[in-house]
Each structure stands twice: as C-alpha cells, then as structure tokens.
Length: 422
Ligand code: ATP
Ligand code: MG
Image 1 (cartoon, rainbow, N blue to C red):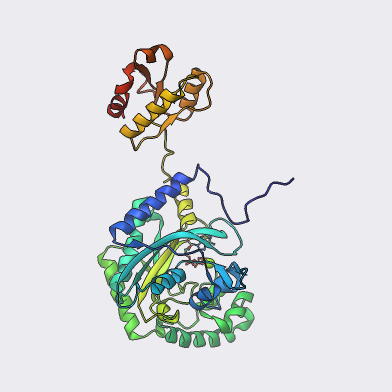
Image 2 (image 1 turned 90 degrees about the horizontal axis):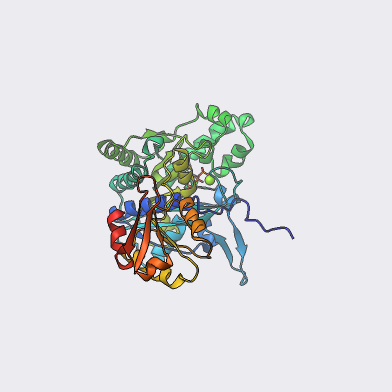
C-alpha cells in the first residue's frame, strides 16, 4: 500500500531543524517580554465572515487562499489565514479593548492555499504583536523598535531593510484608487491579467504587483502621497523623526500598500534579499478602523506579523543557527544495572538541571554503548562497572580531547564532581 504523505505545502519540522525554531521562539519571547507585551491565544478556526469582514472581500487571501468549509452543523468556517482578525475578535469579545490600552502578542500556525515554494507554504507559522488604544506614532515607533530588537537578538539586523509608507485613511485611498483606475484605464492594453482583475475592485493592489511591466507603467501613475490628509502626513513625519532619533534606518516606499484592507496611515515591511523572491519577513501597520468594523466600539490599533519559516531560512542562510545541543553525560549501563542507572540519572538531573543526561537503554556491550556516547558528542561517560559499584564507585570518563581523562568517583559524589567539571 502506498504510504501517506503530508499535505503539499504543509511541512514537518524535524529534530535537526527544531533547535533553530526554538532559538527563534525564545528570542521572540524574550523581546516581547521586555517590551511588556502579554500573550493571547485564540482558535485556529473562526467563522469565515470574520476574515471576510476584516481582511477584505477583494484580497488574494479571501478570494483565493482561504481553507473554508461547512462543518457538520452547516456553519461556514475557515482556518485562520492570519492572526489580527482573531486577536481583535477575542480581545473585543472579552472586553479587553474599549477605553483601555493593550499590548498583546500571539504565535501559531496560519493557513493559506497558495502555490508552495521556498518561503511560501500552505501551513506556516507567524508571530504577531498588536497594540490597542494608542493613537500616536509613538506606538508605531515602539512596534518597529521591538521588531528591530528581535533582529539584533537573532544577529540578522544587517540583512534586513525597513520600508515604510503612508497609505492614509480609507476615504483618501478610495479617492486615490479612482484616480489610479482612470490612469490605468488609459493604458488598459498594457495591463496584465491580474491588474485587469483588480482595476475596479482593488486598484491599489496593482501598486505592489511583482510584474516588472506593471512597475514600469506605474512610474507615471498618480501618487498616493498627493491624496493623503495633512493629519496623516503629520503622523507619518512624526514617526519618521522618532525612527531617526532611535537610530532605526528606513526607506520610504511609495508602492508599499500591504495585502490586507484593514491598514491605514503608516504601514511597514522588513525585507531581505537573502531569500530570493519571498523577501518580506515581517509586515504591519496601523489599523484604526478594524475593531469598529468588526462590531466593537471604536478603538485605535497597530500591529505586525512575521513569518517564522522565512526567519528560520534567514538564520540558516546566514549561518546563525544554534549549535545542536550535546549530551553532558552518557551513562553506560551493563545488563542488570537498570535500577542503578535510573537512580544515578535522577541524581545527575537534579544537580545539573540545565544539562542533557542520557542513560543508555536497550542493553548491549559497554564498548558499543561508549561508541554511541562518542557518536552523540557526549562530554562525559559515567560507566557503571559491577566490581567498582560493589565498592560504591563509578568510572567517570571525559570523552572530548581536552577532557580525555578517567577517574573513579564515589557514586554519591558524582553529581557534585560533574557540576565542578561542567
Ligand atoms: P507576501 O506578499 O509574501 O505574500 P503577505 O503580504 O501575504 O506576504 P502578510 O499577510 O503580511 O503577508 O503576513 C506577514 C508575514 O507572514 C509575511 O511577511 C511572511 O513573512 C509571512 N507569510 C505570509 N504568507 C506566507 C506563506 N504562505 N508562507 C510562509 N510565510 C508567509
Ligand atoms: Mg500573500
């Protein structure tokens, strides 16, 4: 019978890779902790309506990427394609938003039915951060600073560039969209299929088309910057000056519009050329209208999400993966000494709680057990030998070159002796 395989675009993450994932996760946890953000968890399944009403009906995600289905009750549900909608739904449902300030973070799998390729999968992991109830550019700058701090912590800051843009309020974008549509209509013969589809429904999305022909055409197009209000220009200028004073470099990219409809005013992305086509590792911005749009009381907000797979790929590409953890002690256990080994391992783990203590299981000759200890890169072997054990002793061997020694240690002293050595 043919073996079953994982679903295309949904990856298994194997033990060789999990240390890099864990390093990323713990760096993220350290950074959000020191910025005072609190974790929120919400389901991977929500009503499809939630995503349609937040992300926007005419977006790639809602039009073609969602995993939607009717459940056994006939309710139309979707696997979450991103976290902001669920975060807002959960925070509002439990009364965390109105008249309050919240700094929240989440992590977890997201699902989009895209064409799988390097850095683009159908199940992928995001970390996200959302801040509610703070209207000024100060919180936008804080969010960007938080992300920059994570890059520093991971050692990948020099490979990332911050792009920012001011996309104004939705009414301003609508007015601009109309102008953009008229401009593009006049060049309809040069539009690609995607642009033609978006021409009336979501013309701004044409701005971030990856097709070079579209980019050439857009050079002469009207500029969004000419349509945004003085108020949002001022907000954006203040953000830029905050970033300047924090020493965070940025590029203003007038084509940056983001693929989700709920953003307004300043938006940003961190991009890299270390990954080929899938160069955006993190994106976000303000979304002041979303809470109200989803039925809550008006609450301003801003946030971002980053893709873990792309960050892991970056860490690997730039050689920043952590070293594979190696056992500190390997206990060699001759047949009949399982109880002694168990007691010894327990004592060692109590004394050295951060270290890996492996006790040999499955029998076999002491020599082949030792070989295993070498193969695993263990630093020490604690070798149980029946005649020594009768005298209450155990043989301790150093397995690395520098530590190539052997001594007999009273069993009860072994934890303390190893604590000295390690
Ligand atoms: P892209 O333009 O690359 O499709 P996006 O604008 O759809 O990205 P967002 O919805 O802003 O992406 O998601 C934030 C981040 O999540 C992205 O910057 C990326 O790092 C990651 N991401 C998005 N879609 C995927 C995917 N299918 N596979 C892996 N990571 C993804
Ligand atoms: Mg996308």
